[in-house]
Length: 274
Image 1: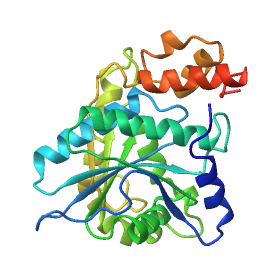
Image 2: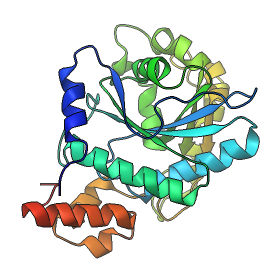
Image 3: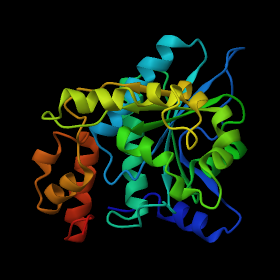
């Protein structure tokens, strides 16, 4: 199977001045009417995209379309210079193909939704937002969609040394929100889920001062998620797919993406995750 996004990825890599690029979907998002638009950004490794990603977008769409009158848009974003993860199987062009399939799956299930798929060279949220503002979404609220394990890393001081978290993220937080789902298995204790659900409240109460300003607590929306996909593991899915267990993996992956993976494996004679 040909890599539809190989040439786009290579061009982006070779352009030293490029920091952000749209691969698929709308290339410019503007306000519709007088109300402030919202851009929901799912920034992930998408290795592979799965129903955990889908659920996070679904819950965020329910939240923001239900509580705001402004238009709501979705961006699927892949950083090719991730602070924590390198380009391990699958390759970035394969992941972009799968992200485009996830975008189509979302469009099919949500009327009037046309997600954008994009890549960037930035590892930090502040830098990613600069690229988004410059090239896609000038005015409006950016909302990053995260699992709970990621939101705690966002405010980890080690990523901002020698600056403090407050210094590095102060201006960014003025125009940005976070939407987060609790994460855990079916065996997770209620106390663990409660601790996650109360994270934003604890920030607002000043429990994380001086590292995290208490005013940032109101910028974080944490929703309890007991959906069966709340503990989907990308690494576990890759192990299944390497063994050719496509049917079992499809319980947690949209069928379009599973079919793509199977076809790519058959075309090359090996797994795209090896």
